[in-house]
Image 1 (cartoon, rainbow, N blue to C red):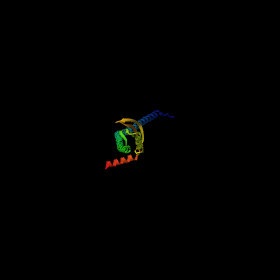
Image 2 (tube, rainbow, N blue to C red):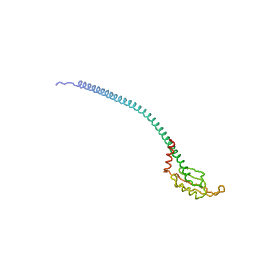
Image 3 (spheres, helix red, strand yellow):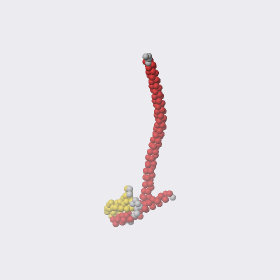
Image 4 (cartoon, helix red, strand yellow):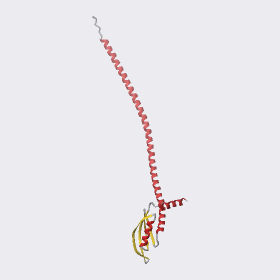
Length: 197
């Protein structure tokens, strides 16, 4: 029988397999590294692009914030102007109201009644003066209550006094302006028409 020694042949095949394994491992490492590098570069480029976009949006946000502040300032100015306009409109309506009030007082005063002061606080009118008798004060209050412009007259005081050696009655009366009075609106319309003409 012939004996063949296969040891060197197996050793060479082992060396060949090892070399192929290391070569394949190196190629796989190189391929993995290349893929990792490509993915890293791709992600870095995407991040850089997104940073540019974010910077653009940030600049737009800052500009819009400035515009919003400007709009808030304009709204504040508009509110202040509307408040002034409201005050002016109130004064305009009150101006006609004062004229109508004096017309009503002149028309409703009976003889023998003399007004000393007329003062207004909101819708309340305070009349102070002298009358020849309490009956004339009562007559005046009745006339004021009959007015479509005035209502709820009430006596605060009525005191007998001597004035220039004559007995008179010093009085103080509160009367209120009727807010839904049609004549006041008509007077305001007449005043507005006169001002336009």
